[in-house]
Image (cartoon, rainbow, N blue to C red; front, side, top):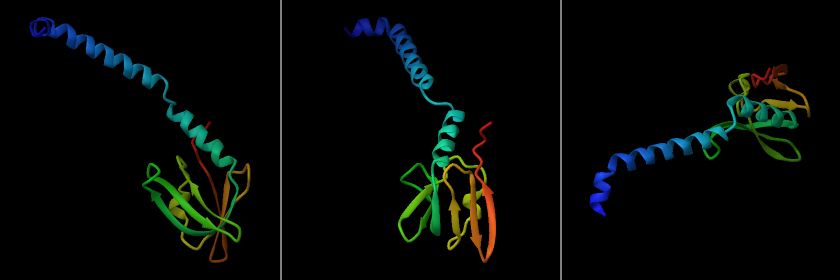
Length: 126
């Protein structure tokens, strides 16, 4: 048996490389493109409605290091995940800001020190 492996090592190695390349091709073909991922994140945030006071903002290490804002109002405390957003909302928001985003809208209204700021979420979808 050992002599068979030694004699045919090149062919066995080549067969394994071809098999590995085939598996990688099949797996990559089924993965979504970055544009598809952006569109899914865009549609997800579109269906979100949130209103409250910013209690915390962090990169969620347990969830792929996504930019996350924790808000609280009199009814609920929720985490808003800003996956793939390019609007700089995460860097602009500060603790203590009041935020509002209506269902189906892409503008986030931020009230800070009596001034209203509006940031439009941007997911680079055309």
